[in-house]
Image (cartoon, rainbow, N blue to C red; front, side, top):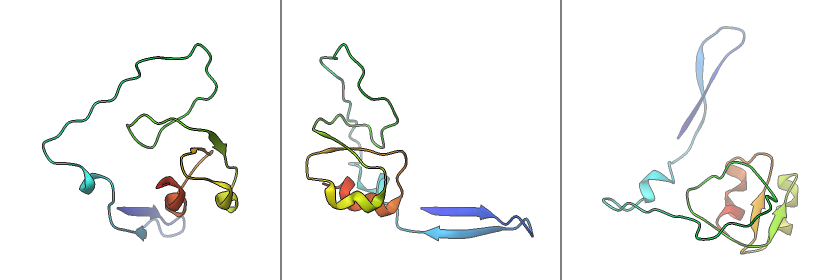
Length: 93
């Protein structure tokens, strides 16, 4: 997983961050998983973009900053404006 950036002064591309890929390499080869909601509630309580393709449930914890990470408990559903790799420890809970 490599992040690139174009320098505003010289116009060149630079690698700004590189880390091991941790999603695709963990997938089971030759296995297709499909998830579907069997029931849907009538009220939309939140909208956004999921980071994965699985379906989860739990108490929602809205974090406005990574500084609130200690407030996140195992089994909760993370809701945040944006995340980055620093949030990974709580995404694994």
